[in-house]
Each structure stands twice: as C-alpha cells, then as structure tokens.
Image (cartoon, rainbow, N blue to C red; front, side, top):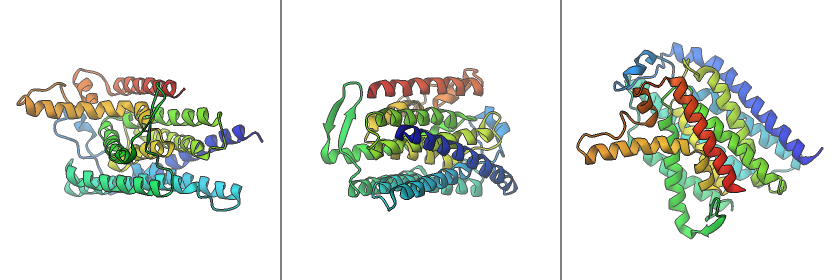
Length: 343
C-alpha cells in the first residue's frame, strides 16, 4: 500500500477510536460525577452562569484516558511494524507523559475545588511552580533523547535562529503560558473544545504537508497522529460539552489540551508556528493579563467589561453559542495563517 494512503488510514482510525472511547468513557463518567456531587463551583462575579452551578466538572477524565489508550495502541502498532522497539517512540511517549502529568495537576486542582466547595483549588503559585518543574523536566528529557532543538524557526521569513541555551527559558515560559491559556479559555460551553479542534486540524494538515516532502521523517508524522487523536477526543467531549453543557472538562482537561499542543510543538521543533495556530488561546490569556495589570495601575479602571475576553462579549449581550462560533472561526483563521507561514 502507498505509504501516504497508509498514513491517512492510521490518522482516520486514530480519530475514530479517540472519538468513540471519549464518548464511551464520558457515558460512564457522567453519572459517577453526578453521584459524587462533583459540581462546578461558579465564580460569583459571573452572574450569567449561576444556573450552571452543580454541572459536573473534571470531565477531562473522559478524554485523557481515551487519548492515552489510542496513543499506546499506536505505539504498539509501530513496534509491530518495525519488529522491535524504536528509539523514535521515546519522544512521543514523553509528550504523552507531559500531557498526563499536566492533567494530574489539573485533577488535584479540581479535587480541591470540590472539597472546599469554592472556585479555587491550588493557589496560582502552587500550580505555576508545578507546571514550571514539569515543563523543565520535559525539555531536559527531550534534549537527552536528541529531539529538543534550540533552533527557532520564524514562519513566513523562514529564518532559522539558533538560540543556544537561551532557547530553554524561552520554551519554558511559552509552554507554561500556553498551557494556562487553554485553562483560561475554558469558560463557556464548548469553547475550549471547539478552539482546540481547529488547532488539532492544523496539526494534521501540518503533518500531511511535511510528510508529502518526506514521509521517512518519522518525527513529522507524529504531530499529525497526535492531532487526529486530539481532534477525536475534543469532538467526542463536545457530545457532553456543547451548549447547554452536561459536563465541564475542568482543569483536568484544559491543562491536558494545552500540554498536548505544546508537547507537539517541541516535538516538531515549531514553537512559533504552533503558538500562532493556537493564538486564540493566547488572546484570551492576554486579555486577562492586561485587565489585571491595567486595573492595578489605574486604581480600579478596566479595559474590558470583564476578563477573559469571552466574558467581555457576554457582558456585551452575545450568546454563548455565538461567542463559541466566532472564536472558533477566528481560531481557524489563525490556523490557516500558520499553515501559510510554513509554506
């Protein structure tokens, strides 16, 4: 069989399996979360969402195991194809571990929120420290196995800038910031899932574009499969998370999604390109950051009616479905821009 056709089939199977498993796991997780009264505490400042109080959270437990099971299956398939354990699988396993431990941080945060019955689990400093240590460990391991590159690719201009050791703190800051950006975006029914779906499509298209040049470069294949599985997971979760949501992903899910994207960016050696594709997440984070800084500097004044940005549009009278649709469209445009930047 033509290797490109074979690769396409693997992507399709990965997407379908991830979707099916997420829906299946969600079917069992939802009643369990309800019985445990794992309801989402709603921020008192978001009065429009008070009717959502009690909606089960920690829904990430439906697609995190689905993602890991399918990725494990892919690795077994690759081993059987090669006939022996391939060193090329180690970076892929590291990406999965990085995402899993970010999900673990989110799980602990969600658990504390539920135990305390308030919208605060781990403190910001605790979460930040754990994420920094985790990202640093991931980068160190990727360097040891020879996958981490210090060369920064500037899209559109196709300039390759070797940052040397300065690359590590830059990667670290961007990775931790982006993972938290996905967390901030998870504030409306289906928003983080929908935006993540567009980025996942970009990852598949990126991989297909790269493999048409040389399918022998196995590292270029991985982001495509990760993207396909990620797409299946978020589409499966949208079955429960579309408006009106039956279940929220919680920090368990949102931190996991950001980590998958950032882990793939490091794997592909395309940090800027992947951040550009996921720039809708970045905009959400920047709106929250700008609001906080301006509020302190101006002694109480605000740039937005409420931050992050999706809440601003809610205050302007937009419905959740409209905000999710517009944000997803803008995210798709950023993904298209990123794809053009790599050509």
